[in-house]
Image (cartoon, rainbow, N blue to C red; front, side, top):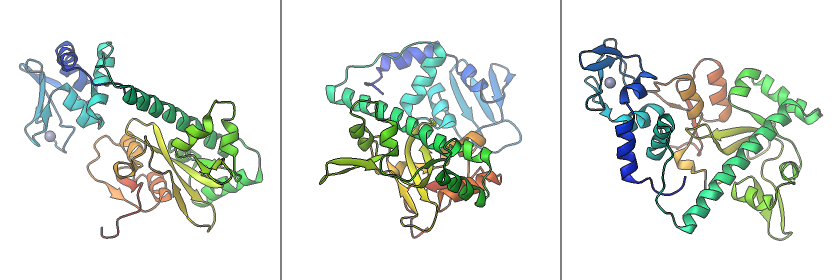
Length: 297
Ligand SMILES: [Zn+2]
């Protein structure tokens, strides 16, 4: 994301769009006088106390007190950060966001994050392909493991589960045609640099791969689980420009995909728990922190 979004643009955007359109595509509304009303998406209710005022370009719920403008609604409803909500509105309005000038360092950082997101997405596709197509004994082992754990192909695909085959450089080889890719993969947390030998090697080897996705569904990191009893049982991506462990919950994106009104969360211990519960219909609360579970809760 580049540069600050100028305030004049935000004001202009809010004047240009109609909050009723934004809300109506997500919440069923009925006209009542000058306003619209409907069932509040932010709390459970049977009679509508949620109102949208086209005059004021504002929404308000008399039941739970939620209220704000179109940006606030998108942030709340779609769980977006402010700039993402502005981006979404700009997209609806069909306008480009002007950016205030950014420092060269900031531009460089943005560029790197974009590159990493793209690499992580390609890595995820590679791992999924390894699980699906590779015709080897090791791949059969991975499929068998998932089947033993009772996972269906459908749930594995929903969670984009993949497989990192055994070996030191499968991922590196996969990307070998891309320039300077080892360093980029290292920054993305996917390969490790051996200082002594000055060589890179794959971080994830012979593991079931769980992509960790952000609220926009972008792969930002991975968790890898061993097939047998090797240690460590789970291996996570390190902190990177895209992955801040304390801010992410594995499974939150998927949970929100299947239930918009997520008002409870259950933190479970392993990736397999999240996926297994989701398969059994417990999508509304199955989450796992991407950090080790806190010991006192
Ligand atoms: Zn409400």
